[in-house]
Image 1 (tube, rainbow, N blue to C red):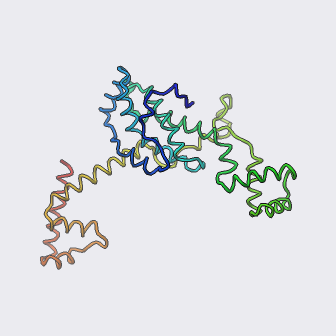
Image 2 (image 1 turned 90 degrees about the vertical axis):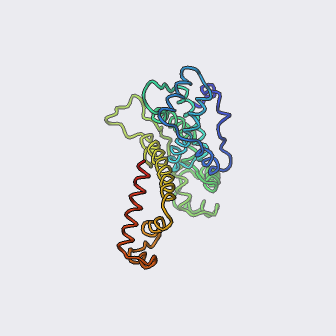
Length: 288
């Protein structure tokens, strides 16, 4: 599915995943999220004019969305960097096909293409993941295959013999034997299967454990914006009001009215009035 002929010619301009996943995440977080209006305009420019700069902005602004989806597949023993790269291919395919006239956000449209690329990558590597997920397991896998060619199916005594030869616990040998003897199972259900009676296909269990990635991104953007507004609102208060709010609402342990009254040499009622006035100013600034 990851055919290079199916992509727009902008993949070389994307941030590259090197040895540091954290550095990549920090880089893509610098690309701003698009408003619905800006996204529609960029999508129109790409759809009608084949404007590659517009397509590039659409891709860059949604790279963090791909990374969020990739986190949902951490339990499959596959490198996060590889999953993200596959998802980025799906994102580019989605941007190429995105019609702004359909009236939905790009992330809603792109999720199918992103997950399709990740699922195909998992399918290609599923047998490797199922057999051995660590360096030690891969080493045991090759030794065990050689031993099984001589011994066939293991009894408990035979498993103990192999465990002694390889210097590993017997339970580890039995677990690996179970992996070796297991059968591959398709992630997707057969098309001709009776949906009312068919067993649930593994693809149904590939959903991310987190909430919808678009909702996560929206929440993170709201949190950043709100924190920035709150800092500006606090900077607009006088030093005494700001310190009273911080000691009453932020610091641990929180100060009582009487403790603050003693600190400032005023009554507790006066501290309450200052606090109430400061909170009203904050609400007014945040609502503006």
